[in-house]
Image (tube, rainbow, N blue to C red):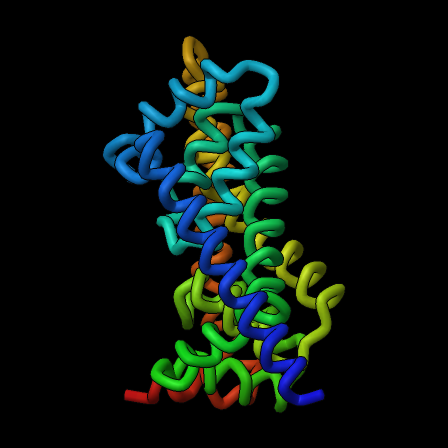
Length: 238
């Protein structure tokens, strides 16, 4: 029985690696890696605009790929506002980031667990997250989503190795990542949606800025009210 389980794990690992290699090769072939950056964000916008009705779907797939393959998420979040405006941009960015985070979670838990556990052994972030979940449950997820303690893409894989349930992970991640999606897509959307209307530009930019400021205040608020050890470790008293 143990041999069968081991063989099944190896098969899943080989399939996962093959899929990852194939997707990376396709993204490289189509030049997506050189586009996904702050410098090329307008090129990305033009590309999305040219896709017409399937633009939102492609954008969501791009966000999922970013989460799976450790691509920078900030340009993609801003792209949502630029390509679709602040309202729809928030919708698509929220869906894309949540599905992407969930996809990485599922890969770590069910598909490439052995490979991810290998990363975990050499990365202290994984142990801190695992210890935090053991002590605090979903509150650890809430805090690490709201407070930039650990890189976003690493978190997604790390939580797949913890005991947190998929429905809890999905719901808490979506709720806690939504403010960030609003902040960046509104700031990005202010550039396009406010063209020819300076008042609208400043309104959208202001909403994004206010949400961003609120997010920046959350770490201090949580630290005052939480006894989560990881916060003290990452932010030792001076």
